[in-house]
Length: 147
Length: 147
DNA sequence: TTACTTATTGAAATAAACTTGCAATTAAGT
DNA sequence: ACTTAATTGCAAGTTTATTTCAATAAGTAA
Image (tube, rainbow over the protein chains, first blue to last red):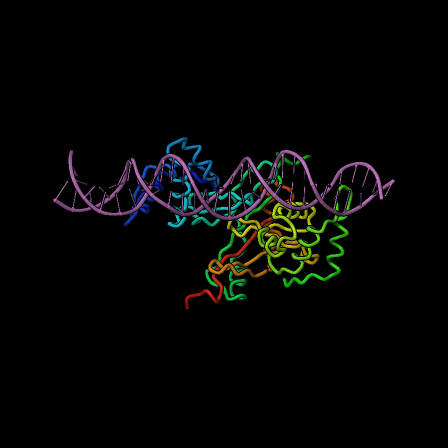
């Protein structure tokens, strides 16, 4: 799940951003560009610091919310009460998971997932529709193992 | 995954609570008792309100943290920046998942899970140890489906 | 380019979840 | 019952995220 989004990707994103009642602004472009360079989900605070004064933290929150609603960005939750955001890649449509070290918080992108039949089985059993899932793995990475 | 913890369960929990440098207090007993009656994970705020003044909200937070550290209670995250807590049942050792309606927030307890080989495969591939996972399903329940 | 319309931003205030410091309380051992 | 230290309550403080509103700037049309 190595990212490294191409320049072409960002142009596509700009195209999606453009629309009625919606403007391409410098903060939004900068946030998208930054997300395109990151390999793992990042927090709003991290984005704000990386952009060092380019825009207000409030604008980061607002932009991320917009980008999420447009399905350009996906929100992840690593269990520390802080939302993390990642650019949705065209290959996996944002559906992938992470392996997080409980000690040093290192993040590994995971492309494996369980068989989708499990999800449809659960959906059917309980009469739910449009069922998705959030799945993250937690463990201790090789560096943090007290050998 | 129907809960309904027996009186016997709570006695066991009391036994676990008792220990060196640790005291059985009224708030802790009341929180355990309340959790024993709930079928789904509940928030600290919910517990505090249900106990209506029996103890301070701060004590609820502190007790839950203690109970979690003692593996009597498990913390869940339903993606709304609010921790939810559930008594760990002796049958599943706290390992189970939930199906949450994105509209009305109804919660269904799920006892299905994917094959554990996926987890060990991922652990081995990335050199991680003690790998666990957090998995929650989200969808639209039958009542909320716009038919 | 210039003017116009309104989406967007910044700054401060607010909200919600959770934590910390400390004096008062209370559980549990002697 | 006495003593000691864990625990609680209250107030204050953090952190994350949202709201309000005047000022700014993006997109459009002249």
